[in-house]
Length: 295
Length: 292
Image (cartoon, rainbow over all chains, first blue to last red; front, side, top):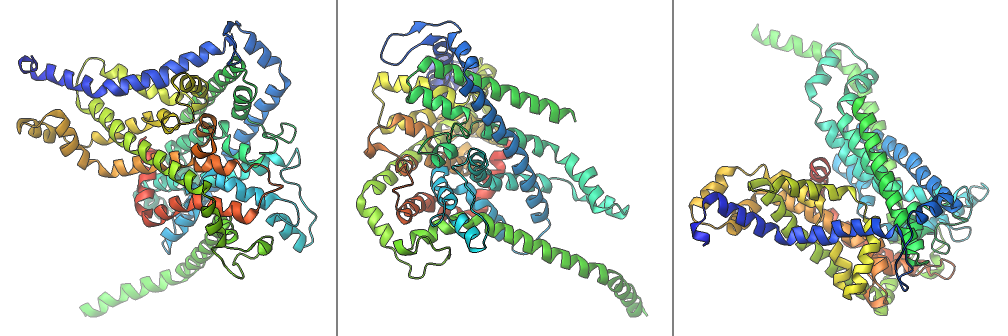
């Protein structure tokens, strides 16, 4: 039968043969669970009992839950601190590193290495740094120069930035590499023309480099924002004694989801939280694409 | 005469540029030193992790970076304990299997979407691409229920199945198959190769750099993956390295030199791979970042 098919028809048969397993995979492992998550968010279910219809109950409960609003706020603090800080540092490093030739590869390696580490392993290292005297490196250092101790992870105000720092640190290398690739793709002739006209370095940066770097900036902003909105590994592993603590001061949305689903077994409520996360991610990325593209 | 003419402009040009060049060099030196200092700060946590893993317990709380009497005792202790070794093997198996699966399936799908014309092509492409918008966290609960129903909890397959294919990898490969000329494929068809052979023997070798980039990303991603393995594993034997490392929990009763050794064991493989294939990996990151 196959022999009688035209070349075009044979191609169709091959294409669908190649796609059979992947289509099944995406259907069962991606699309069905997405629908299922949305469905569960409208149900009450504690894993053992039966699933009962709850309507919008989970969402109403969520919007009345003061913990949720605290968590929502924390998630945006991660985003609003993390994205600009990492964007600024990575751009400044990339901009200067791009203009150096001497041991360029070596310097690049130093900045990129943290990207190759695992969040859990590094969370332990940073936790150790943050411990009080006589354990923690930072406080030992402060003590040796006579500066008062800082409570990092045990203070409700300092804990969130302390957890954020290793997350920013680990992501910098990737952003620097992407920025440098972006800088390389700007034609040399623009700079030469500007130099002949006697334009200052500062003006070149603002009038040529940054505008031409816009696609790269958009990519990094969207990419890192999604990362900070989904922060979990660092928080969970640096506040293991009381995940999200002290007093929920570091708890992000994903940690609340994990806690509700796998410690509280309130699957419907947790699913509603995941739907909220999805909507937040969607709105934030679309807004950023809109704003950054227009300008 | 000609000789003198040649010399004059060169020397005057040299004189004119000498002064600013010197200050530019000064600027370059400062720039280098500042960036170098920043780079040292960046690797400090890694350096301290390695240094502490080589220290005796009594020296752990000293701030010095270089151990007074370096020892491999911690490594021997941690590996003899057996748990870390098991987690290491688990992580290795899982990361390797998912990498192989992604290399095969992402490229097969990317190739099909790029080189075949068939009804449904556009819909499939958009459908796969749209899964990029769905955060993993949203799928975790249904995946857990699924694993519970099918008995996948606490097994290798249970840890691996969500990552066997990725939309990101598919899209990356599709972009790269665009660079393979259609003539090559046509020629192979005329030579009587079937489509599977053409994909594997003609197209795949031409996109090797992209495959390498994909492999690095998938491997690193699965090696460090945390939330899903944490959810799906129950028994200590099935933990991956990150989950095992996280399970030590409370810092009050932790032996820091042993924890640092564990952290080093889970970090060293990726660091070593990076140091060996540095140029290659950085090119891969750029490719994956800009095209994917």
